[in-house]
Figure 1 (cartoon, each protein chain N blue to C red):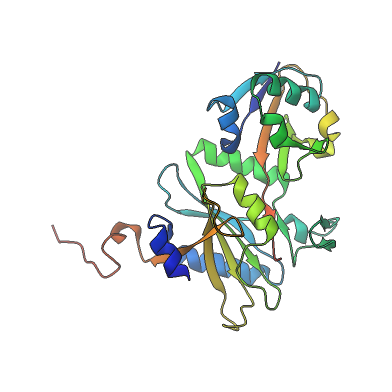
Figure 2 (spheres, chains in turn purple, blue; figure 1 turned 180 degrees about the horizontal axis):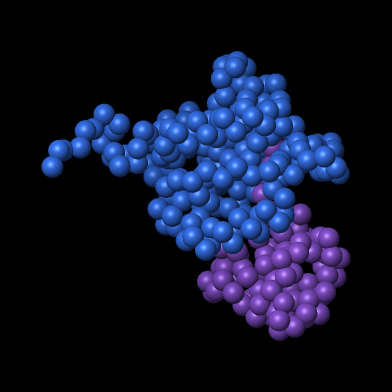
Length: 91
Length: 191
């Protein structure tokens, strides 16, 4: 099992919980597992089969974009942190 | 326009200390012509900006591969785009959580000639991920005020009536939060 930290804006899907457990060997599997109990979460994280461009996901504090993205491995006891990214600029 | 909006949404105003506004502008000037970015943290639930934390614009770092901007088809770097390093985002989140603080203000600057302190499509998208923050933009090249940075603030509002998805709010600059209700001229009673 991994412990998943949920950012404020997504807690509507978890009944207000900021930390939930999920199982899976990859980020993708963990998200599917979360979806099975917290409907609607997956669509907030994945667009067209990829991690949404402005969502950051970390496994044990490492951004999964540098570790295989949705296929990044998740170990038993890992922490998974989800955060909204910050970016922007002139038109 | 701004006053009309503030009257429509009486609670929608950013009350911010003058020295913090000065720090934001100073940061924008230091990083110019790159976009500056940062946060002002405040105690959870107070909506009071207290502690300015400048962030690194990862798009301005050497070696940044460029952001492929889908709406315009351009590749963006630090002079027309900003983003926080993802590790910095994580560390900040952890720090604020440990201190029972939230991001009260999220700020960045626009630096190109003719660029207003007005949210772009991505600015609006990002604001949806931080709906409780005051999204402050510093316009470094406002043609109406050459040489004077312009500071404007925006909030997400559920009704979505503004075509940009954000509503501009008034910015009330105060000398101190203690006298926020009575104005900067109020003098405390001597005990």
